[in-house]
Length: 388
Image (cartoon, rainbow, N blue to C red; front, side, top):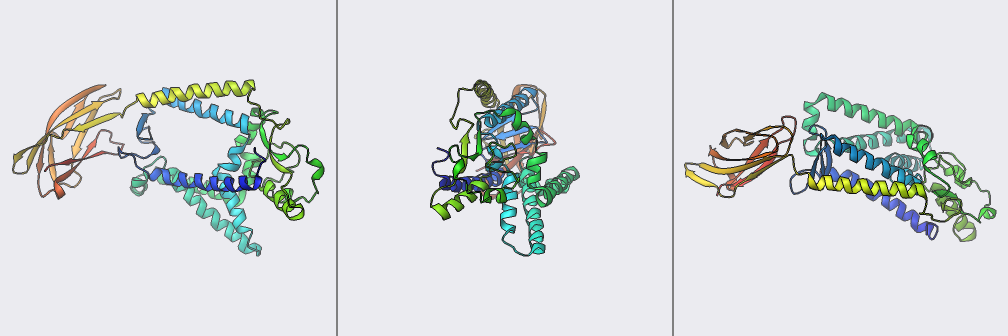
């Protein structure tokens, strides 16, 4: 299956890379129905916002399960598919390949080097910004940088690290530094997928060395398997071009299922890792589904007018945290005064109280925005009530 149509697979490979990168850049900006990010870990509150759910990672158990699941999925994927992450999804490989492929079109060495530096700076800046937005809301990102020197310093350090990597290290990172390449040696076996010579086609090699010239990690793809291979398929594409031109057929390099070139799912190590991963996955799903928002605030639709721009409304506050909270209400536009301004709710309890809203001016469309703060380090919960 992996060798059936290497040309089509190469196109799918490149398309998938661009789709994944596009999703990575878009996800932080997507808001769910509760106003939170589609997926973001807020470092100020230790909350994971994931698909309209809020997981409180102040709980050691939730964080521990998530780390274990990620670890076992990492091991399972490597046992089955080797370093497929490196070539297909890793941003390091994706942007390093883009830099080299764009710059190699320039013949002048000085201009080529300048272009590599420029592309490295642009890509490093983009990655720094988007990665930080997975921990800081993109809609409050500029204000956070202005008000938090620590966040700004972290951003600058991260940018410099990525820039140096893209500009001067690139695939040397994959070969000599990346811990994944070191772990791969102990996590793979004789049945793991690899990129190399297709069994039975060794005699067809014309020794053109095209695969060696294009390999970013400078290995010989014909020697099977090589732990430094990052599965980028550059050698496969080069081999296909040579054979297509000379013999009008596909090349002799491709994906191979281990030494027997046969998919084997009955491996004890693979089965155990899969069972553990599935178990941890369901435990985490149960944790997410059973964990509600830390503080849930509901405003009654039955709003009563007392005349002269004064209204009353019932508010229900449910505190799901293991600590008492003080919820403070205010109108960010200064169009109304809310009493009581602060409500205290005890641990794991619900409180209902009537608030008075004294408007000080005309309310646009009769809709008043109310902010509720229960965490002085977190972002306020925003609600819109209709005073008509």
